[in-house]
Length: 184
Image (cartoon, rainbow, N blue to C red):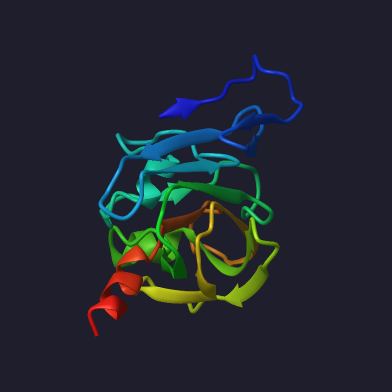
């Protein structure tokens, strides 16, 4: 995981062509058959607690006992996740599992994204309201297009019953969907 510290200037840097800011945390997902790599960066991350970590690596690990949780005061409106895709096949869907689905209690105790904006390197801006469920949500994008950068911004949230942290279990491009269409 790449962790950019306060020692960096507050001005924007470029990392793989993406804006990266001081304090931002990043994690890289390695190559698969359908993509060379994906870099996930989050504008903030909740500090580790009780042996749990909440970094951007949790957005693609496929483990519902982990989640990315934002780390700013308040409910997390305006916090962002950046995804940089290197040499991926064209795709048209994002798969999202909202909240922290470790348990029903954990899910309800923490905030969940309600509305999000997805901005693409192609100039698309898609606003969507996510249902308040930890089940898979499919977000359709224009395409299939070979996207290289996505920025997901939390617009508003379903507040947690106990904590203000807003968490997301999974956000990944659905490269497999395009592959399945090839075989139909």
